[in-house]
Length: 268
Image (tube, rainbow, N blue to C red; front, side):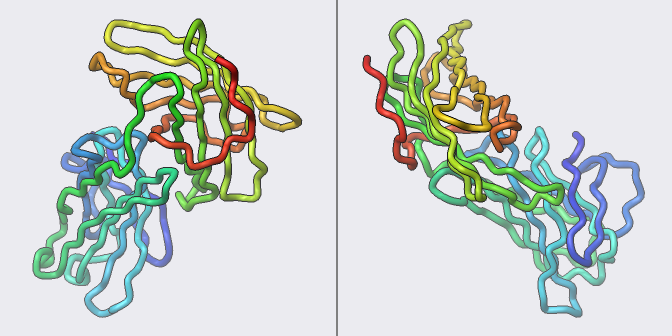
């Protein structure tokens, strides 16, 4: 399984390992790898991972790497200029963003556990959902946190996308609002779409249209259920966001919209 590539940060130079276990590339320093889960499952969307190291001769921590979990929830990195005898301890943290804030979990390995090893396996890190996963039902209000990252995986903007489903009779209609932490004006408006059923999976196909003057031409949002026959929402897919200051890709909604509505509800 190929590991996520990391990003060079600060004075600690590192290279991503080609694989967590079967890489044939020669390691230049201490190899670090591990697995992160969310409620016991592979994180989807990927989770932000940060690595900090302490050297034996330096009490100050150094941020060594930032990366995203791969398709198996794994991460791996070669701390290229940290030789095994120099390494005192390593701290790895995983962060999931939602509309109520940041959820962080981590693990630490110390010198006594490392013992000069060239390859260090981190304990498994698991985060649990703190917010309620929503269901596709009429009247539900949901919200998704959507991070936008720089090339070095620093946060450039944290957006919140809120959805209010007002009507699911012959079509699916409602309201939406996107709010940003960066100095970007809100986009908001109405949406319409359809509901399809394929076996045990029900999917909403929504077109989000902005109200008033906006540089955002609109967004396409696809929200499937988990596929177990229930109406519980799975991982959604957002597209068309590049013109609306939102990255395309997978997003996860949770119950409750922490943003106030800017448009009146549609009549049912």
